[in-house]
Image (tube, rainbow, N blue to C red):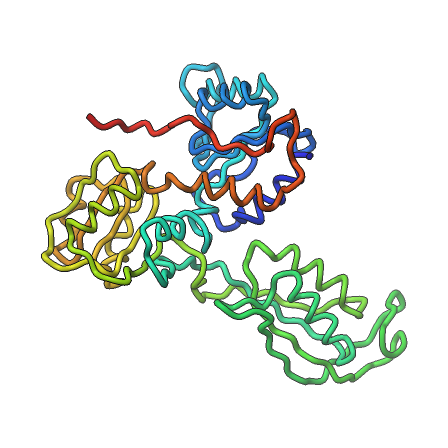
Amino acid sequence: MKLSDILSILEEMAPLGYAEDFDNVGLLVGNPNQEIDGVLVCHDALESVIDEAISKKCNLVVCFHPILFSGIKKITGKNYVERAILKAIKNDIAIYAVHTALDNHQKGVNKIFCDVLGLKHSKVLIPKENYIQKLVTYTIPENVEKLRNALFDAGAGTIGNYEDCSFSSKGIGTYMGNENSNPQIGERFEFVENEEIKIEMTFEKHLQGKILKALFKNHVYEEVAYEIYQLENKHQNIGLGRVGEFENPLSETEFLQLVKEKLQCGGIRHSAFTGKSIKKVAVLGGSGSFAIKNAIASGADAYLTADIKYHQFYEAENQLLLADIGHFESERFTKNYIVDFLKEKITNFAPNSLQCGIILSEENTNPVKYF
């Protein structure tokens, strides 16, 4: 397979538009036209992982964390980032990162987090803002069904748990074409008044190009009148963190023991016990101290995340149990999800005499150790 074919599948799994503005996701190293011999999926694309890719004849590394996060001006091998990039380039190994594109996905990092713990009925903790756009266009009645269905097929019209959502209204459109026009109805220089249908539907921002392509391809007019608006509505299915519930409440000690076992934590730092049982739990994989107030506002009995600083534990205010379970630990099963997704989408890919061309890395890249 060409890398470009796999890129399309990866972007289906975690659309790059879902990523936070500060992030660096997508193809970091490589040429989309190169042939891929094998895919190695890991948490961090360190030099040891590149060595593993070489030994297993994989020339695409799909990582969760981007090894290239902030800008660099030189690649001399003086630190772990530069050494990994140099080795990847020397060995024609492509690197692709998903990070917050998968963090924000409704089936991504935090849904996996909830599923591992057994939390039910989870929903987004911090819905993504400024991500819903609205298309308004106008066409003749005979073109409405074809155009509307094409826009649905392109991804427009999804609202929460509903698909194929739109609104139509009747009106009168007017126009007069010049000498270079080729009007669908009427003649050049003729003032035309004609019944038209106004179609309105929302879509996710990253789909705009696809939506417009479907609009222009399926509209009957020579000049397509359309408008796109940025909406202030929050996206209820995309965003950071999740909140879910246990079927049966646990004591605080039972809860922490469950978390430690399920996520294989070397240790858990936590705030003072509140004395309340734990039923509703907020989670945010990775560094989530910024969302403590969101967790409290959600009514959660506990909040699980990582990289909490000393003074931030005070922010629990005895309203919930705040627990730092470790950055790697909170995201540890994400790479398994990526492998399963790729294997489901790519069923005929077994190059280099490998049983499967998609491999889960055996390297433990967690930099934090416990004594």
